[in-house]
Length: 220
Image 1 (cartoon, rainbow, N blue to C red):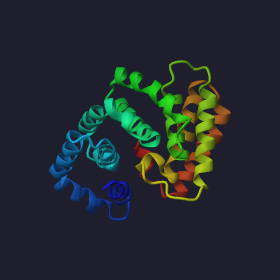
Image 2: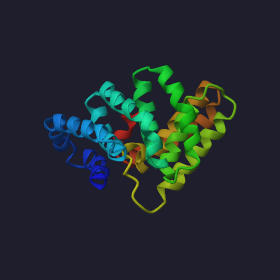
Image 3: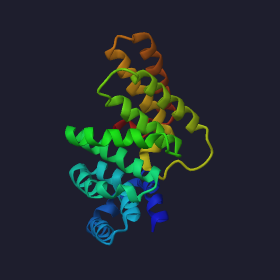
Image 4: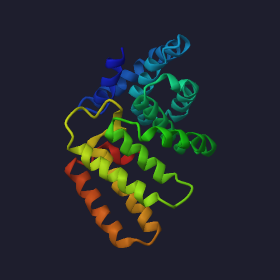
């Protein structure tokens, strides 16, 4: 079951994505039933991977509230998960909570992400988590270093062999590096560092063009 769920993000963003999204529309009640069953039976790892599997579908259909509710049910039980899955859930939740402007919820989760990130074995997931830590840092001290670390890891992850899709779009090689570059460039613009920002922005746009401007540009 878990291995099957890990393959879902690939088909939802592949060449047959439109057909798969429509199929998910038809299966939405069954997806909700599977989520409910895995939660009620205490199968928290399966519950987590089903959440991660359908997160991009929820995003595409604007079901952020529903996504946040399911994840909030899992949050008290995340200690049952391995580090990477735990971090993937927390980062996914932050994305949804920021979009929904649930500031207090975000503040509660950020320290937990900070505590998990160094132990994370998935380099691209770690890079994405670092980007969020920098983006949402309450104190500007050290933010530049965190952004630069997230970019360095994303660069290294692009050339590392092995699958990178099990955590969905948040570890997409073609999306993560340009997204990190863009976020850091925006931060530099806000702090009047226009020269470095221009260099990063140019690299970011070149990467998006090379990838055909893949769907990551719309995924925060």
